[in-house]
Length: 160
Image: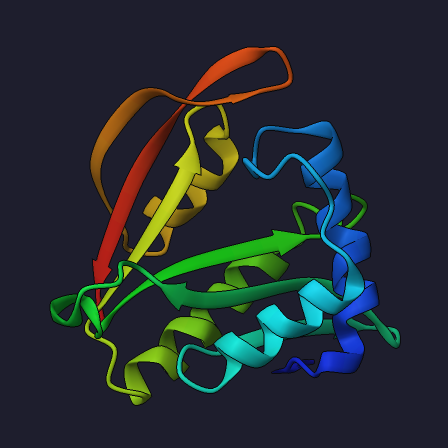
């Protein structure tokens, strides 16, 4: 079941996200946020941009959200989208289901363009975004330093 995230989901969402922060360059964050910070992120993003979770057997198996793309007024209907799935629940279609629902809701809220930023080495996510109708928009090499090496990013977009 996909539903809107609540602040009370923050601890479980953080349990999913912590793996990516601590063990991968999928997220360029160095430190796992506090629960209160995750609660703030949920509150700040869910009204304008949406913040969704996918529940399986009473637990959160993944989450997806939209966030501000850039600060300037002209970008206000462009949204950056992100999706994270619990490491034990990968390759079950949860990420795609979450993103499909997120994009639908973002369009209903008047968003025009969705942008995804994917670490270059994350080929599975790149393939998934392309399969969901995103278009490759470019590569920025060596823009993030994490886990002892430089990483690039690939950018994708989709008109909603």
